[in-house]
Amino acid sequence: MTIVRGFRYRLDPLPEQEHLLRQFAGVCRLVYNLGLEQRATWGRRHRIGFASQCVDLTRLRAEFDWVRAVYVSCQQQALRDLDRAFQNFFAGRASFPRPRKRGVNDSLRFPGREIEIKRLNARWSAVRLPKIGWVKFRDTQPTRGSMKNATVSLDADGWQVSFACEIEHEAPAPLPAIIGIDRGVATTLALSTGETMKMPTSLERIEARKRKAQRVVARRQRGSKRRRRAQRRVARLQARQAHIRRDFHHRAALGIARRFGVAVLEALNTRNMTASARGTVMEPGRNVRQKAGLNRAILNAGWHAFATILSYKMEERGGQVVTVPARFTSQTCAACGVVDARSRESQARFSCISCGHTDHADTNAAINIQRRWNTPLLDVEGLRQRPYEASTRRGLTVSENPRSSGGRC
Image 1 (cartoon, rainbow, N blue to C red):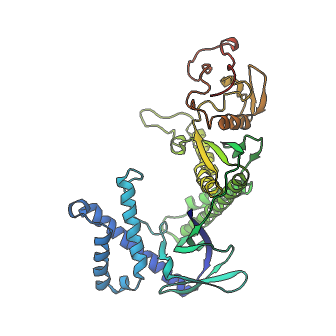
Image 2 (cartoon, rainbow, N blue to C red):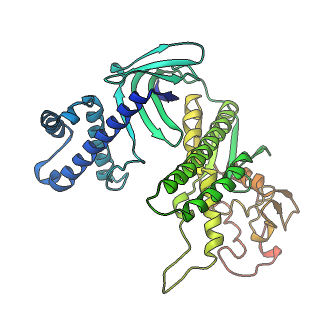
Image 3 (cartoon, rainbow, N blue to C red):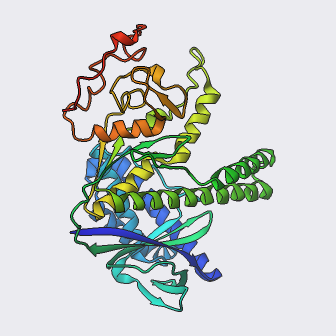
């Protein structure tokens, strides 16, 4: 079994090296945008693809010295990214490719066979990038496997390098334990074992500082140096939030993957859940500000990113991630199976109106999620008794909402 893993480090380039990195990123961005315009205009008629665009790139390099000054493999990698973007578009996996922008897409990639790494001391190493030289980076973890490529990118915290390595890996036998995971807002992760995990409180403190910095940006004159300086401060705070969030996801996912063989998640469509409630001029939405706050909380939890990280960590250890329908998991009693919206007394408390079972609402939902993973009736669990107010809109009494006959298929 071969797996590909990324190892990310913080670069510490010299001033002249940083100038070259910005030049390389700018030319690669230009090559990508020129190739996008060419394929969008003439692609279908002339069947333009990666190979033909590499020929055009050779002509472009012969005509302009400043294009030829940038390493050719980086420009070819940009065209390869464009070709892959069009493949995803025609396969229906992504939208039509968009132009790359300065300040957003400042990155370049080198093939792994053309770079070299050497150790400097206990904390620092250096990577040799063609036409740039040896660039120091903070060595925080050892790399494994064979190097496939190295991606250099710029974010609010500075230049970063990511090594994609191919590793030969033998997955062990999966663990027998099964875990259900409910992803929420107040409680980020609730496990069916009763454990709960929340985002670090430092995110809230940084969020308060970021809002204050955003108000400063709004008061600055557009195009001024003070506005750009204030925008950079906001970007640094956002990058710090992203690092903290990603670290939480990795730690939580690793702990789950080491203990369980099957992780069961709800099939959530985050894009639809975070759609704006603003509506139109003719039909304005209701509770728009409340919905906007809920959307920010959902996106801050990073549900999709956690599922992605958990998937590859489980696969690496022989386990798997399964998704099940999310209908009525928060209204179903984990003890007797009765579905009733009135049992969800509050955000954190679940008290069944039929059997009296009480539990944390998210833990109760996680148990229901765990039970659904291997039943052939995933879409109809909980519908043996019609849910109160959720589907029938009738005021059912408790006697009309019978208990489950026991057992699940």
